[in-house]
Image (cartoon, rainbow, N blue to C red; front, side, top):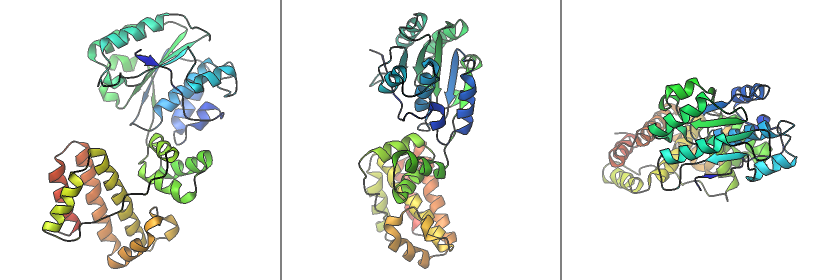
Length: 330
């Protein structure tokens, strides 16, 4: 099957109240329940909660009480078994939605709902749809069945066919401040303050990434190892990091960035209670005493620049060699 049912991570809270850190999207979707449109386009970076929001919005659309969270309908949606809420994902091993998948979606849209008065179809990656598929979907948006709502997810509006954008209600999702993520992790998942703060900062504004990290078995943060010296030592440090898979490179650099920002904060006289890497407090105090805050800020900026270059698929060896020289002061 090209489609599957999906479920949102959540509880019996009103569905739109649980969109932590997305007040504008929450308000927009709450108003939309009064007069639902035929198509919505959720736009925002990966991991900010678009998919969860889509499932919660779908639950509210087909529940008689607008997403009470306790009725049989809501339980079926949350459990991924409601026949009138279907999620369409890019098939495993593929990079795009092919025209055949979109045609299957279009055919399903034309059928009447099985149980509820409305059916909801969620296309999980609109910006990964082939041009022919996007054009096929456009015809459905031009003449949508009254009993169907489409929720389309995309990372960037620029990658979506303009005619699809014009025929959809656009709902924007932004990065969530770390303080809001930390508060959500503590309130909804019961995390202690130290772990919640660490996960919130490493999630970089992506609540979905934070929830995933919080619900997995705790893993020790990567040990922060700066290049021990210039020359061959710096090259060896860069080689070791460059040999890691791309995601692991980013994980280590993200942890390093957090550590350097903590060092800068302490060096500037900041309160230790706000330190994210509290597990490495002794080394951080030593680092803060060894250099002024301005130097730690400069190093953090160098790491951040390296991460951005790697995200743009720059040559890892060259990027990390340059970063090593920056970190040892050359």
